[in-house]
Amino acid sequence: MSSSIPGSAWIAVCDGAKGVVFHNEGVLGSPNLRTVAVMGAEPLSRQELAGDRPDRIAAPMGSGRHAVETVDRHRLAQDRFLEDFARSLDKVVPLHEPQAALIVVAPPRALGIMRRKLSPRLLRMLKREVARDVTGHTASQIETLLSVPD
Image (tube, rainbow, N blue to C red; front, side, top):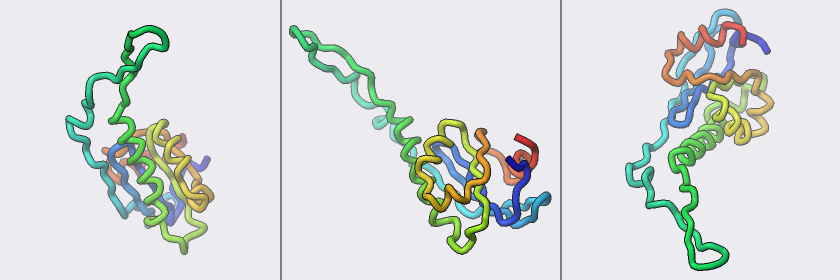
């Protein structure tokens, strides 16, 4: 894939708790990322994260009960945020730019979740995926990252 940022490209950077959308106001070879939108997940309370003691099920025969694996509420919250972020891109990326490119930068697991939730319009715009967590980086650091070959 191309190793530079096209002019008028939209760059979505996210992890399981924060998402930032940039628009490239520069030209090919000379990017200038401007922050367009920032989203953050609602932090879960300690009570929501801890949950109750492990669930138990009755044994098929006899009177025994067995503990079963608990639900990872933190991972579920991250997945929900990634799905919401992917859907929100439809509102952020304008409809009147059908030729614009979309670049998504996220950890590998987050990329998979987002890819499943992007609309068909955004999937057609998707030109590049970068499997890295750069949500804590500045716009200029992201410009540099996206300007080097994958």
